[in-house]
Image 1 (tube, rainbow, N blue to C red):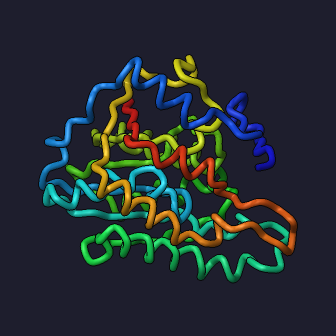
Image 2 (image 1 turned 180 degrees about the horizontal axis):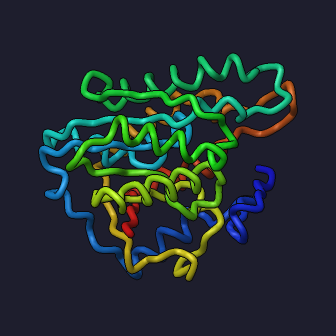
Length: 258
């Protein structure tokens, strides 16, 4: 993939092939993370705030399946519709992506067996410009989040400006309202290294997926055809390459808390 640079993300640059799945697997076999306490979620309402349609699956497609067995009420907030994922494309215009990407997200929920048990809210904020709309995101959280909710959002230092904007705003909201907030890494797996000092590993916990959950997560990711297929009208590779997908399909998901 190309390089994703933005002044807001400082040294967290997404470029090249990134750190491999094998490197991460070896690192965590040598130094396992503590397990995520699932009992905290039982019978609670869990709100996942995703910068773009697919981030909820890429980040926590395994945990979402487990939460459904714990009698959780699931809410997914799509901050944007991901309309800027294919600039200059004749295959995927912003207008087409505005329809396609939410439909892909719905198809993915069906694969996880969660569609009927999940409320989905679309905020339609501007893709690529979420850092300029933090006030609107805050207002939406005020409207849709209630006392006692557990929040899950993109990591506030994930390396993608939209992911970071969402993570920072959601964490600030959670802090002000005394809510539990977990951050999930998506692009940080690409630019970070094992033991990277930029990641607060001491605040990290892991959820290990069952083989069935991992299979369903893979099937769900495959629904995002706009993101996993190359664009022959621009000559650009897929946004999510096979190597990126394999890395996001490691046998565990990592959650960070502030």
